[in-house]
Length: 114
Image (cartoon, rainbow, N blue to C red; front, side):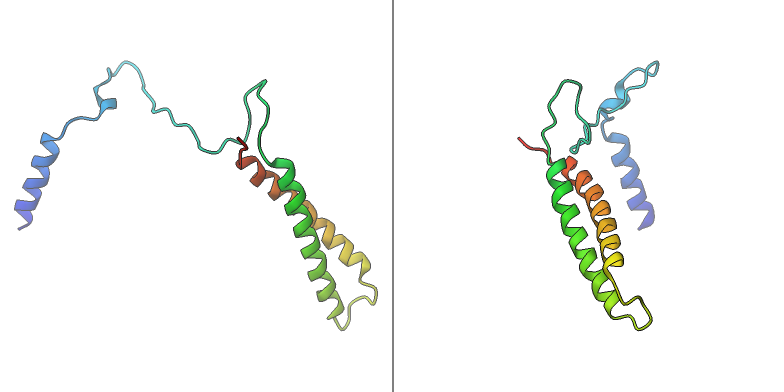
């Protein structure tokens, strides 16, 4: 059974047509032109039509508030932690806002407006 299926496979490969890129001369390299669906930059002189600033604001604010609420809850539950959690809450909230702003900017660049 193996011999028959191997022979059929070899026959199919031998009779199959060659791909288009294999028919080009060998003195030059022909690369396939691939255009990405997501562009993170724009051409010179072209207006940027994406949601980078909206993503920065929305994701930054959302992650900042979420990080501050979680930090406040974690700081208040500590037995030996500081009695005043304001500094920790503000610091973690600002860190969350910075990370969220960076992620939102990258996500906003990936979504293009029409």
